[in-house]
Length: 504
Image (tube, rainbow, N blue to C red; front, side):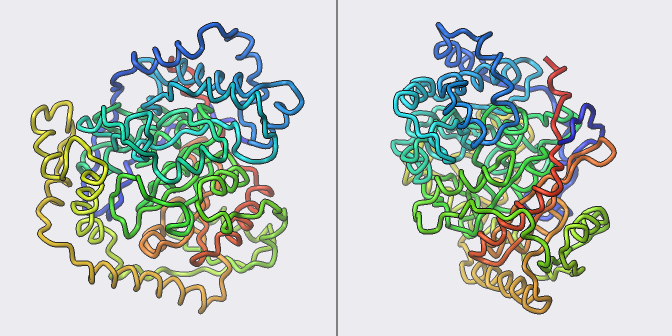
């Protein structure tokens, strides 16, 4: 692993739609809202616990995998209560201050009690049981608000959990709380920095708060995992919203084949592309969290990984000018490297969002009996206090609200073409996987709904962390995970953030 003390390259907020359509986003500021409530919920749960004793167990928790954590618990060195308390204390210490990371927006009031229940009936296998999980704040939970980052929904607690949350609970996960996000999946206004929401404020990148963007929209999930605020987290992706924050946080971000994890109960951006996925410190933990989140357990991933699986595999590299080191490493690992180009002509992910957002959001708001029932009502609510409700504007919302009728045939054709283009690329080059740096080639697999996983690629020159983003064909998630594991096991390039520790 690489310990990174200083990151000096400023980031630019990642958007779902083509970057060329937008001007630069505004500079990040230290802005946070409603932290006293979170601190109170943490203090109530930590009351009576020996915090110094719990902090002394950091070496059993920090940077450890799920399997390593559960081994310590099985050996009696750690309890689920101590594990959960450690994360809550860490959130209070490094997330809630004036210059905290502001990655967490809700605390589960039952987290410690749930952990104590696990100590009474532990399951110490390599699974999610007893492991604290943060969930992005666009995923329904019936005991915490689900806001999508908006003020309008800041006190809205759905009656039912998202399907995936029920799966996690049934698997024994400890729902630790909710992670902040770029408001409405980064679809408020072009000027809004990545990681900002009107409900919670600005999330910061732990590698260099203020100067390096946390990217979005799963900003809080990425920052929280990188800073060890939870063992693992869930994000959502439409076009790069898991991939971008994972890469710049030097963690693993896995977007499975579309619909393997249910999106029922998730605030939508564009239903044709929206996907839920794990954000973790390593590939194995991503597979463990995926297996717990899916409803169809016959689709679970095998954890019987092979260290040298990538050897002899044909990997297509899409290089926009920054992949030389990646190509070198792939060759050293014995992969057959083929340089490829991507044909993104006509693959208009921005068009899909423009066609679907207004109607998908309205359907969600009505079905879940939210306090606002449509995009138009949300826009009008925001106008009551633009300084708080839409600090950077709401131009994208207003443009989307002008859509009269969704062109479903056009959307279907774009998705079909994206699938055809990727399938042809794989067939023509006999590829096992495609790879690129960060989000360089993210549009095609996003629109096609194909699986994507980002693996840390270090932080060249002590600057911004990078990720190697692998892509496979639809439902070839097992092959994709196997390749990612093999690459990770033989490169071990996760960087560890340090600079945020000096901001308190």
